[in-house]
Image (tube, rainbow, N blue to C red):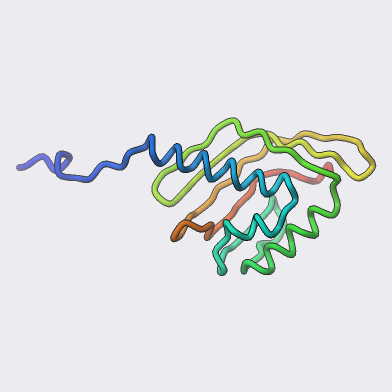
Length: 134
C-alpha cells in the first residue's frame, strides 16, 4: 500500500501563522481605535458575531452598529495579544483587554477570540470574555 502522506499537500504553518498574526494585529488596531469603518473592512456581509454571553448578531451592518454602541460605553480599550493560532479557515487568539471606563476607572480582563474566515473576510466572529464588570 502506498504511503499517502507523501502525496498529501502540506500547509505551511509558518505562513498561516504569520498571516493570522498580521490579521489579528490589524483587526485589533481597528477595534482599539474604536473605528467601525476600519473594522468593517475585515467583515463579510453575512457574518455572525457574538460577544461573551450576549445574543448573536448577524449581518455586517448590524455588527457594526452593535460595536459602535459598545464603543460608546467605554472611553478606550487596548488589547494585548498573547498568542495566535491558525488552522485552515480558523484563527484563534487570546490575551488581555484593558478598558478605561467613561468615569476613568480601569479594568483588565482575559479574552479569547475565534474567527472563521471565508474569502479573506471574517465569516464568524466569537469573542469569549466576561464584560459583566464593565
